[in-house]
Length: 171
Image (cartoon, rainbow, N blue to C red):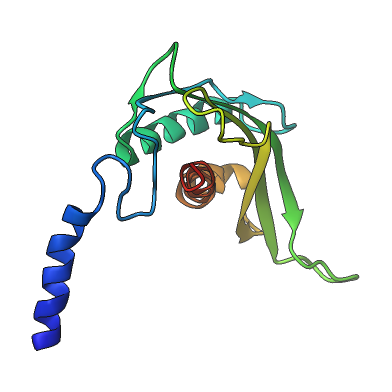
């Protein structure tokens, strides 16, 4: 077990070697001058999307930012600004074959995100970046009966992680 003792010591000493406020063990790095963020409510422009999807997603993104960064939410004059749109919300049959019934459908959600860092002009995020994810469900199941579950348990978590990693691992 001598190797286990070495690993334990390394893990205990690791935080001492990381600059305070710049890095975390998740690989997220945020400029120490950036202290606040703002997120506008995501607009829903996708046909057939639930009317509350923009607000729901915005709140989930705020929660993720608050819980996984040291940044504080502000409604005005924030250091980093986020906004976005729900641009696609559709059901697609999975691998349909002529003359056969489709057994699975996919609920596909595409979100377009804009972000601006007002503290560091050297960081050039794209004006708009799209992220998409899907969840499969039985073609025998009515979408409305599984929609919330698919969004909350599969699609939102992956979209949030993708957005978070894209913007917070490229500071």
